[in-house]
Length: 447
Image (cartoon, rainbow, N blue to C red; front, side, top):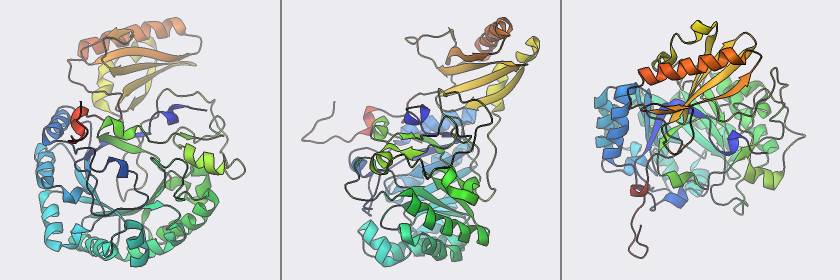
């Protein structure tokens, strides 16, 4: 079984993550980017300017997040932040960090004054013994806690992230108790996924039965405190009363394309019958290979509509910390490309689904429907028609009114051709930078 979940992550289209550094002063034992350390380059300032200029024109993203490696080690970090801030095209600037350098209040305050208003801090242990063992760096826990305390004092949006694995699974409630005094806006828990160690020879994967036991305890503490929570890479049906806190979406990422080559696939044995299979990835293949499909543990919610294997993962809702689950965006700047077409045929435009890879317009007329698809222009790929920015396609024709739907699609193609002046960016790659993303090594010349 390999649906879109074997090919793409679910996309939160309004968030853009930019990887600016592939160095780190911690060495977390489970780290999923360790194979890229000292191999990949961070995104150049020039490449960032291109992405920011695109956002100025098209307002694709409302948030930019800088990450690494450890992002605070980047010597030009404040230059990256300045480019994003001075563009005026982002509502929020976020850092994803281990928090250690933020123990220096002067540095933390400088980041805030530069325009960083959201901080996503990794914390994988509840005390120094646990965290320092995981990071393999004595003192890392104390530094991270001081950094978190400084952020709390500065009054910014503070979030934490904990990756669940065998070294900390039994301490999840204690991690919550450690962080809560600092009044985080949100705490996130991500199931561990191996990027290279598919056979889990290091033993970091944990049976889901054990994961959810401790995870539900942690989520219960957060709910009682009124603190928002999010869970990734743990099946939604295992969260019980906390299912609303499930969120498998990830932002668009400007990073080397090859970074995603070892990214594991996901599947669920109940995908065809579960109501939530469109937005729940299920189990990673390394987990399935080690522990099986968990068919007796998973509890699918019966579907209320027929299952149709999707061509792409759906675009997910907005990430608005502290505001709960936000709805998907309406994307008016893309809707205008086909504005007025549906009504001429007694139909309606029922949905606009936008990801980095495609923009899908769903037209409905009574019991009939069709999806009109825009993808990145590629003169070598087959297409119904082409415009300066797009290849145009249609798919998923359903119902009796096929002749009317055919005319509607032709009219939609004509409308897009008339209204597309070029410059709209869609890209089927996961990463958005190429050969310049790799470091040259004397013993192994690149190219």
